[in-house]
Amino acid sequence: MIVDTNSDNNNIYMNKIISKISILTVAFVAVACNVTDKAKFELDPNEVNLTWYGEYDHEKHCMHYNENWAGCGWSFGDDSIKPSADFSAYDQLVVVVDSISTDTTTLFLNVRYTTSSIVTSMSAPVVNKKTTLRVDLDTVGKSHVLEAYVMSKRPCNLIVKSAAFRKAPQYGEERELKAHDGFIDASEFEGYSDEALVSFHFYADGEMTFVDGEEVKPMNNWGIGKIFSSADVNERVCSARQIILKKIGEQSFDCRLGDLRYMIDFDGGNGRRGLYWSVWMGGHLTEVRMINTTIRETKN
Image (cartoon, rainbow, N blue to C red):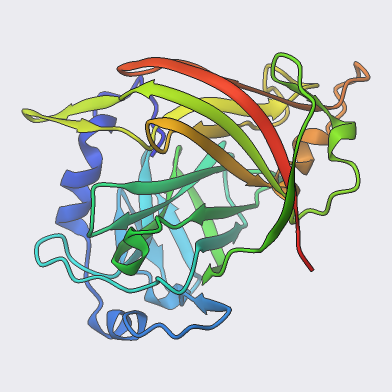
């Protein structure tokens, strides 16, 4: 979860709000808990049953977000008795949304599990009132998925076009991209398809925490950097992608190349095209440093 650090209640909203408002739809859980090993498993927009700070229109498949950091999605269990759905046959959750009524700047796709306090998260900016959210499932937790939901940074309305658990693509050999102080020229991405995987590798030493009541908890899914167009370093035109801290140590923030094209191809009039990325310290982190950026093409 990436939050606005200027908000006083962001640190504690997750566990307290979701545990009180999540609604278990028994029929849907019965289906989800018996997932077969197919290429993908579609989530039915009619089965959305989880909201906070908002509501869901089942007829129009429209999520209404009334406040900052509102959420809407699917609940497969209940925090008190901990039932869950087994999606171990899959590696990713992909949600496509469009007709976003206002420029919320960024949406987030989060997945919670019963097996741990981990929340896997991925951000995606809103471009032309549309976006595609993709998140990799935790390798251990995906057999016990509690909830999956879309969270909005600002109030808005959006239409759920599709949502599905999928198998991850297979990739070929990894190549390191040439970079200088975080800048990667657009030419480095030539010859790759939109399905190619771009990985921003970095290292985090220390731990981000927040206080929930009297308990200190980790914030491993907070933002720790940004990726944006090198022609628009102030993000006036191209919305940036938040780099999310997943764990302590060496890690990567992975993006599909097609989801970065709008930034790579943006021409701000200075003749410079490409990507720029950076990381910073936050919370109780003692060190964050960039390692490199790599790309891998999908296998046919």
